[in-house]
Image (cartoon, rainbow, N blue to C red; front, side, top):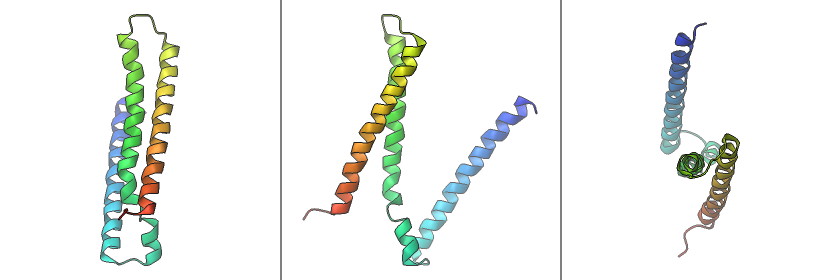
Length: 117
């Protein structure tokens, strides 16, 4: 198969999957809000809405860490080898994951303890 056909097919397939997942999630949320499912299913999707911003935060921090490593290569006044850049990318991505872990633990703990009155 030729690459000119394969690449657009893959792109449209992933666009289709993204739209499908969003529509299914929207349908599930509407069913839950209208009370058309039993309590066991509501329990499964209880923290889902709260996790979306944390998931976005996680990947944002990881991508910023990778970007910082790449920018260090461009802005360094001394030579930085390609291997060192890859190492920095993994180190900064790991630091992003660790920071996310502590932030999500605090958010989860605060949510479980409830509002302080």
